[in-house]
Length: 304
Image 1 (spheres, one colour):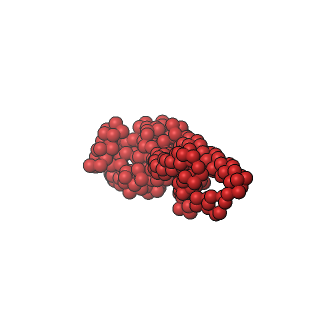
Image 2 (cartoon, one colour):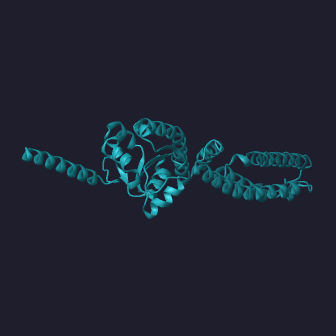
């Protein structure tokens, strides 16, 4: 009987040791079920460049039970693995140097368990700190990913349009480039895409350069108009008109921003009217000279 009881106690003792060893064998943060990024900075980079949402898994000795549930059960589920592929996932040791800063940032006690979900802009979408929520992890992740996608689809479209605009710019097709850039700027206030500011910056530079060239053309036109008002067509500055026309062509080709369109059209109209008046007066003078039997005067910059 004593031998039997001794054997029972031995089994129970060994079982308790095995249980304790099993408990010790689990190391919080050792999970390999999900594709974890190296650190928070890598996740931030993925969020900014790939518009990915972020999942932060905070682990530590104070949250061993929930950590064990997460790593030995929840993270192994296919539904969680499927959703995790849409996230930049980071393990954060709350007691570590970097972990303490992140714990403070997201209001988490160092060493405790928590899962924080962020959208691409690193804005908190959900925080899981209890077992009941941990068991719903895949559904919570799915909701965060879907909401993130709705917003980032617009961002991706804007980036794609911007890249196309830059391709047109490299190929010298400024009209197509400016058209796309102005399309991007038109959604300002509806999206926080960095490419909206980039597009606005390029348009502003084009507007500034185009306005300067247009101003020079307008000065040439003004001087040419004054030269025609002096009296005879011989004083008319055709060279100024030619200079103005070349500058207007350059503005239309290289700086076709909509803010300059009205001024450009007005300048082109003035040139057309000026040349029409010059030709009218020239024909009138030629008619008068022919009626008086005189040889027509040469046309400045033209032919006899």
